[in-house]
Length: 142
Image 1 (tube, one colour):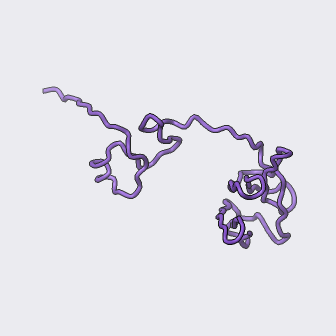
Image 2: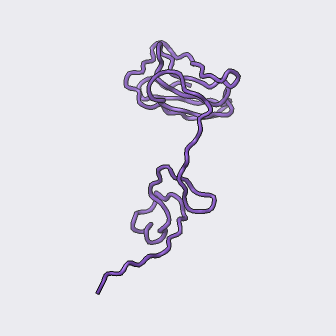
Image 3: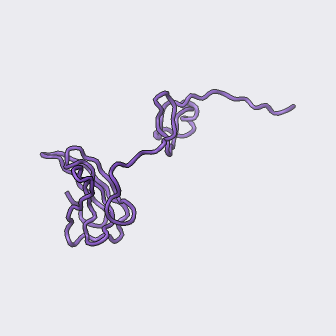
């Protein structure tokens, strides 16, 4: 007797689900995902491939990879980024809407970029909008 292939319909619903084990997720939520790379929820249901995004902020000043980006609408023009400087120690930049350029924010002379692979940001607002950035090597800065 020949082997038969049978198909069944699986609706892609539930989005990304990382709090269940794979076996129960497969039985209870067969259309959910455990990992999504370059996919997002579609308006019509299920998932769709991300076609890409356009950058309207030009290239961040400096050299090498961008180490971190943060958006904070309540501070300056709202977009901040970190990248190794071409010269000096200032690796923190802010976007200036009026001139459409990246402007360096001066960092202390003791700051070094040796060993820095990623910069993380945390926003807070205890009395005024602020954020903290840390790179795992240098002291945190506000």
